Image (tube, rainbow, N blue to C red; front, side, top):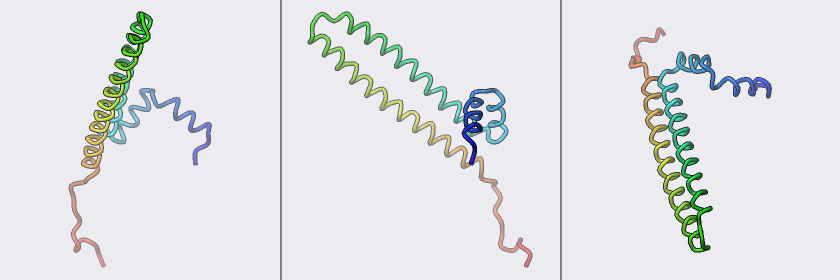
Length: 118
């Protein structure tokens, strides 16, 4: 089992080009999948933060409690819909990555029963 210091060192190096190169050497398909997931996640977070800021502006512009409740209701509805869509997208990316990784590990060679010396 790795020490806490070693785990921290690995965590710090995950974003480095050397780490990416090492992953690429081990499994290009898994590396591509990892980068796709990170890219999709970052894109989603940026979009959500932008919408959060727009909602804050709308809240500050409210002139009545009913208007505030409508802004909050719209915000929650939109957020739930977007998070659901994002989970579906990530699930699809991960499913595709799993299939590609499994395909990559198959050697394409099968052993016959007569190739093992007795």
